[in-house]
Every structure is written in C-alpha cells, then in structure tokens.
Length: 336
Image 1 (cartoon, rainbow, N blue to C red):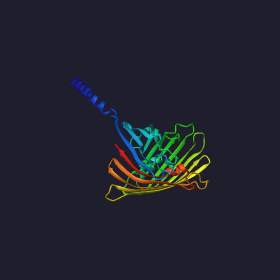
Image 2: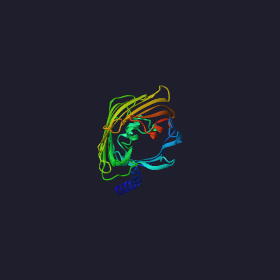
Image 3: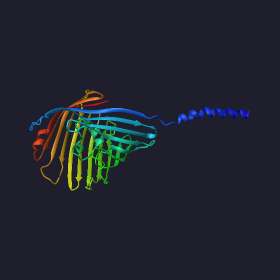
Image 4: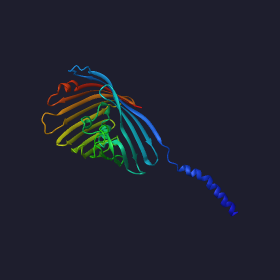
C-alpha cells in the first residue's frame, strides 16, 4: 500500500514539474516601435541678403523609437535622430541607446548608455513645445539633451519629488566621446502645491540643476539653473535663471514662458522670452528672443503651431544675422 502511494506521488510530481518550470520562465520581452516627427514651413520676414531661402519647407527632426520591456524591471530604448545637415540632405545619428533597471518596489531607476541628460528633458516636458525649437540652454549650445554616461533617476511621493543624477562625457550625443574629462549633473524638482496635473512637471514647483565638469582639453564647464514653475491642465507658466561658466567666460540666461489652453477647445496660446548674455564682462552683447503663437490639437497624435520667432541683438546684428533673425513659421508635430 505504502509502495503504491509513494509511486503515485512520484508520478504526480513528474507531471507537475513542467508546469512549475513554466511558471518560473522569465517574462516574454515586449517591444514597441513608434515615431515622432517635427516639420515646418519657414518664412524669413527680412531676406536682405537675397539668398533665396526666404521661404522653405523642411523636416526638422524625425525620431524612430524602439522600446523594450523585459522581466526583472529591465527596459531598453533605442532612438534614431534624423536631422537636416544644412545642405539639403539628412543625417541619421543615435539620440538614445540605453538600458534601464528598476528593482522591485524601488523608487530608483539605474541607467547606462546614451541617455537623457538631467535637465533638458524635464523642461521640454514642462514647456511641451519642442516642436517650435530647442529650449534656451540647448538652442544656445550650453547643454545637450542626451549624452553617454551612467546615472540614476528617482521619484517619491507620487512625483512630489523627482530627481536625476548623471555622470557623463559632456560633449553631447553628437559631439563624440571627448577625452578623459567628464561632467556630473544633478536635477532635483519638488512640488510645493498640487494642481489637477499630477505629472512629474505638474503643480507649483521649485527645480534646481547643478552641472560641473571639464570640457575636452580641461577648461571649466559649469551650469547652474533655478526654475519656478506652475502647471495645471489649462495653464503653464515658468521662469528660470541660468548661470554658465566656460573657462574664464561667465554667461547668463533669463527665460520665461507660458502656455494657456482655451476652455472647451483644442487651441492654445504660447509665449516665450529668452534673454541671453553670453559674456557678462562684455557690454552690448545681449540677445533677446521673443516667441509667440497659437497651436491646435487636430488629433491626439497631430498638432499644428503658427508662430513668430523674433531675435534682436543689443550691439546690432551683422548682415547675415539680420537676414534670418525674424521668422514666421507654420510647424507641425505628429506621432505614430
């Protein structure tokens, strides 16, 4: 009797083994593919040089995103950036290529590879109009939106506080690896008051960024940013101060922007002012950029923007600058 019982139990265990083994198999990878495209029609309001580029259609950016999700909190991202070269051609380069790991129940995500730098992605999400052009620190060449490095993201209290630290090359994703000098950057954002926007940029917030390092060759490269912002589902307003140091040259940027979504409409009004002082020790070298426009969300994946982009130079513009400094644009963004 006992022998038969033992034999039956052994048989059951052999039948159960494959099922148990199957339940422990790792999660099947999930891969999604999508894209993001920025296109525009540009009209130079003053074509004093007669260069023949007074009006033109172009694709300013085309991103192809491949996202992977695996078991154990592992995710990956590969993004190609297709951009104009200025000679009527397009170039393809990597924008992101990284592996991220979020341990079970952890508030932290560790990243390695070609990743987002700590500040630009945060402000672009807050502003929400990258389709118009880069934000001030990116447009003027002080920071890059991605770079080669390793770091960690953190989020606490339902995005009440979020932060990102990155140790990276410092030359940007299109600037090569540089030499042995490196940069380190830390952004911390805290929500002082809630609104009906519970995202990582929503609410009344204080955000700070500090980036220190050495450029290729050893010159100082330091960036400090302080930002106050308010974002709800209808209104976004923000102001920031940027201090820059490149070797012996100290510069600054003051930037303010706002977005208002009209009630019961898919339309919104935008405005932005960027005041650039590339060298605080040099007089009459400030630049002021004013952007204003109206956008319309045609569909969930398609938005258009009509705007003017006006740039003035305190010390006067060169003929080449004067020819292209004031522009009217019809821009579009679509995702798939």
